[in-house]
Image 1: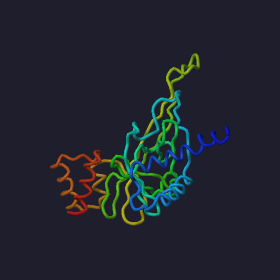
Image 2: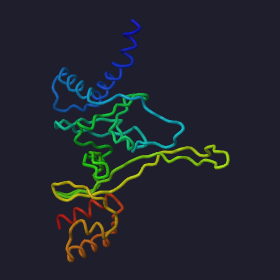
Image 3: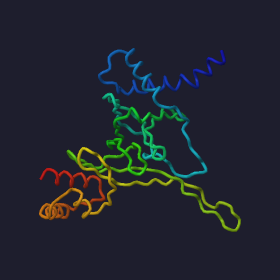
Image 4: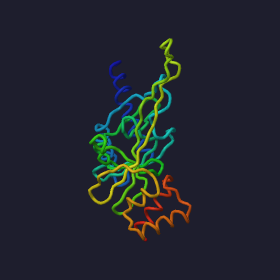
Length: 242
C-alpha cells in the first residue's frame, strides 16, 4: 500500500494536476470528448520532462525571463494544435519553455513539438541559432511578410568577488541575463546579428537612397527609437508598406 501511495504522489499526481490545470483554463478548443483530451494530454506529457522547481540560494537572480509566474499565454505545437495556458515562463539558461504546475513542480516542454508560443502577448518562435548551430527560441520583435527582427535570450552565472588575501568569497554569484538581436530577410531565414542603430535598421530594410531619406524622416518626425520594440514594428511596417 505504501508503494502505491508513494507512486501516486511522486508520479501520477503531477500529471493529474497538469491535466486538470489545462482543463480548468479551457485551453482545448476543437478537442471533443474527455477521452480524446486525456489521450492528447498523455502524449503531450510524455514528450516533456518533469523537474523540481530549482532555486539555488547561493546564486542570486533568476534564469526565468518573466520574474513572476502570474502569466498567461498560448502554445502552438508542430501538428497545428494551439493550447491557451497560464503560469508559463521561458528558462533563458536552458532555452526551454516551462510551466509551473505547483510550487515545487516544473514541466519542461520538449522543444521538438513546439512551433511557437506566446507569453503576455510576446511571441516566440524557433530558428536556427547561428552561434551554436541548433534551433533556439527567439522573441519576435518586429516582422513583415519576408522580414523579421528577433531577440535571443541567454543566461550565465557571474561569479562573486573573492578576497585575494583570504580567498573567501565576499559577494554571491548571480545569474546575468543577456540578449542579442538578429534579423533575416526572405524565405531562407538565415539569421544575422543586428546592432540597433538608425543607420543599421535603414540598411537592413534595403532602402535605396530616396527611401532611406524618407524612412529616416519618418523615424525622426514621429519621435521613434530603434531601441524601443514597439517603435521598431512601426518602422518595419512603414518601410514595407509605404
